[in-house]
Image (cartoon, rainbow, N blue to C red; front, side, top):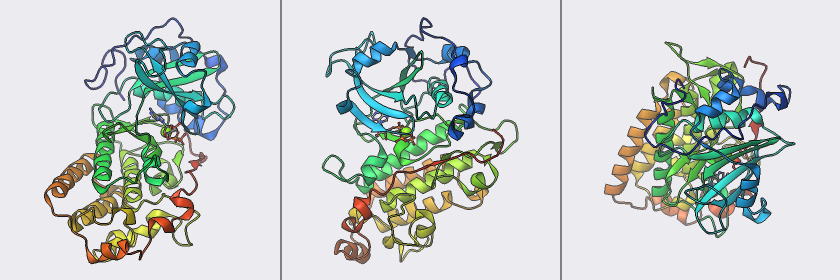
Length: 408
Ligand SMILES: Nc1ncnc2c1ncn2[C@@H]1O[C@H](COP(=O)(O)OP(=O)(O)OP(=O)(O)O)[C@@H](O)[C@H]1O
Ligand SMILES: [Mg+2]
């Protein structure tokens, strides 16, 4: 990402103060490099700039810890929106003009991510998030409202995304999370693809490196926005095709060449996008040890079916039966398969993916949705179906990749 202070990327300015009053350097308090493999991985994303510099550049507000404590009603357990490797995410309220804490239910809703002080993925990811998200702005990236850096406390403040993560919609069961329809899945795929395409564009030149369903958040209209830039990395410069880095990310989503060599490119994100496409088509997790043998790894299992016009129904989420056209299903599967090409050169760019998904949406809105004999069969309970899912389809949450001994 070539820009810093002043030239905020894109148009959607967050013109809030970046008050320096509480800003301080925390290098001495950094928890060092030996903490966790994930922490050390993102060094390269932030090393060129000092922390003070980064925070001055970021177009976001600096919050006092007490402000966020009040805004979340003392980080009340019943306001937890979710938990990740970084810590818990809480719902809170602030005044939309002053950004001071407001009464619950009034003002602007925020999501406050609070770093675990013991189980850190750490300061460096926190910093990378402020650095990238503070400067990048796009309708398909979640807005970073601000941050808190006070003593040992590290927090991030985002716009609240009322429909939570794509992960919850695909894999959680319960009255709160209805299965997403085919059209909504395609809408979410397009929104997320646009977010990645923007990151890969010449304007931003960023590799996201952590594309997965829990990092795709949904607003009230199911517009998808990418969150979590802790692993994001500047893309290669000049005529280089990749950057060399430690292998970080999440099991099940990382591209094979990146896993094997540490060569990270925009095409690594395209591969991860392909994995998420297959998760959306199938309603199954990228990795699920609760599945029968041979089905643990979604991509390996689904690959032969994705390319088969006859057998594609074997992998399509039974809860989608009757909602898609045959042509639409085949196109979506073919696109996913292309993103999953073993040779990165054969994967499309994210711009091409966006174009293909836009075309798919047009087909979807104009074509007649009929039930194929196969989908009728699935409706009748053959093949895999929702009730047959392991532990309500939840499976284990994805696990983080730990660093390989490749250089940072
Ligand atoms: N801005 C937000 N608005 C609403 N809910 C959010 C927001 N940010 C995060 N969440 C919820 O909190 C959960 C935890 O998010 P977090 O990014 O900390 O972890 P994760 O992405 O699930 O896992 P990991 O740490 O491996 O990336 C998300 O899955 C989502 O449900
Ligand atoms: Mg996340």
